[in-house]
Length: 230
Image (cartoon, rainbow, N blue to C red):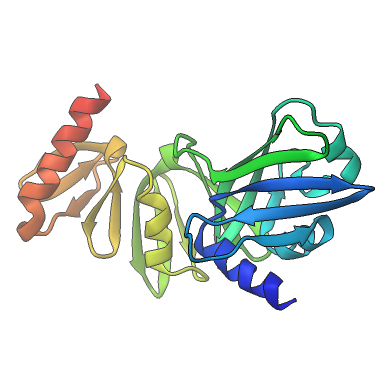
């Protein structure tokens, strides 16, 4: 159990960027995880141990990854891709891709697990024991007020009390269309009509101030984003 707990901590810290091997032996499956750091020893888990490890982290079973059995592994004769969502930190849900493929040796498979590219427009938070999806194309900006993260859309504002702004910002800033205006405000540059003096003018004509000390920097970021987008 101690090994499982230690690996659990590393699993969360590494955001599931894993590689390893799967060994099949008379109905038993052992999974050998390898770490990029040479000073850490590989970990070995059974299939049941893996399920135990991830039981409270897998939030969306998209196509069967949490239901893999020995027979499923044994039947793999070409690369197979699994998509799933996992909660890597409290309330933060991210999407991952697991690829399992033959090694060329009987009863031995290779696998990698990594976070999917930030090309998807959906951001997911785990709130009140359920997953809540936000399409970034619908979001004008994210702010903080009344002790909660506030996601502003054109026609509504959604308040989230159970997540911190830094955690939310970490997720949104992985998408290149968001820029930090001031400490607790992220602006979706796709929803900016123009910049006037030290203000973002949004597509709904709402205005968001830009700190004067960062005005030149933010104008350059916005200009480069628009050029690259077009």
